[in-house]
Amino acid sequence: MSKLWQKDYSLDSLMEEFTVSNDYILDQQLVIADCLGSIAHARGLHQIGILDAEELASLEAGLKRIIVLKQEDSFAITKEHEDCHTAIEGFLTDEYGEVGKKIHTGRSRNDQVQTALRIWMREFTIKLCKATGDLCETLLSFAEKHAEVPMPGRTHMQIAMPSSIGLWAASYAEELYDEAQHLMHLSWLFDQSPLGSAASYGVPLPLDRQFTGEQMGFTRVQNNVLYANNSRGKFEAMLLDGCDYIALTLSKLAQDLILFTLPEFGYFSLPKELCTGSSIMPQKKNPDGLELARSRSSVVSSCAARVKSIIRSLPSGYNRDFQDTKEPLLTGTKGTWQLVQIFQRMIEGLQVNEEALIAGCTPELYATDVVLQGVLDGKNFRDTYKDVGLHLEQVRKADPVQTIKNRSSIGTTGNLGLDEDQFFVSLMKTGCDEVLASYAEVYQKLSGLEGVETVLY
Image 1 (cartoon, rainbow, N blue to C red):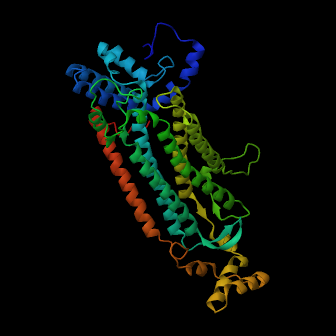
Image 2 (image 1 turned 45 degrees about the horizontal axis):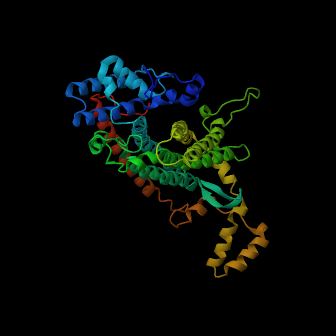
Image 3 (image 1 turned 45 degrees about the vertical axis):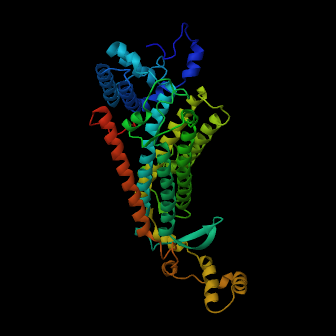
């Protein structure tokens, strides 16, 4: 099929390569979302008399065939197509004749891309939220199992105060929970249909945008058609920022595990199946996954920054620059998904070396406890602090387990509040399941195919 914008000339081959880039490869991930959006659009065209019932049936049949082909990994998109949108329209025209040329009526490639991406982003956001919730639960189970295992707390990387494995693991669980909740909020933002906005200014046809939005399961229409266009890139950046927060947390967790699995510490042992080896040193089991987690975290950050840099100075209305926001979106989201999955396995297989942890609780760890005991005995804090600081050799090692049990304030080692944490994570995951089930119902209703439960391939 010729290009959607085809004129009476052939595009220069270098310009074609430059303008298409790898979009046709990236678009493999958007085929099902685009087909679902196209079914909704076709129904909208039928509603206003552009398509008759037979034409609508033909287009729906063709779009369903494409979905099945995609599920079988048999739907081809070539550089000549430029993207999945041209490939889909070309298939409909080749297989069903003139009616295939009607599917694009009333929409631009811009709002077609926007709609497919919005469907994709909406689902991905909830799935990442749930997967992050799974990791939270794993960390909370780990924290509960090792709640009374002492661990040296550190500031400036130096021995500081008594801590515990429970406190350490639960801190990451709570941080990730907050970041997952942020994704839930973003999913509401993404849950608005841009279809019908065309190239920023709508079209002189009585398109029922509310109808088509409801067909796709959107809770509302993105009202202003120019804003619908101007949100392109901005919404992608917001999702990538949400991914970036998770990636930053997991980078810190990676650094902790790299440090605390060093032989000099020996607090933890990594599952050997998640470690790689050296090509020259036969004894090595390297934490390459953790090192790459730090690096991949920076990749996610760079994707967020890249999108914002692309859209920063654009005028309102559609600009081709938006095309270059797709690759960082798909790269950053995939990187975050992999990070969450890797750490799920990492924590599930992580071994705690209790003896090394107790041995690491050296006398200086209890200096502040000695000061505060002096306060409880009636002394003032400042003088006691100075006295202990000048006579650190007199600080004796305390019972590390009893020390962490003695801390009773909310959120401290003796009062972790894990039950409440587990309740809220479970509640969040249940919410994710309900939303994902509603999406699957929409996909199946639109496509008439029971096997269509996700657009993420």
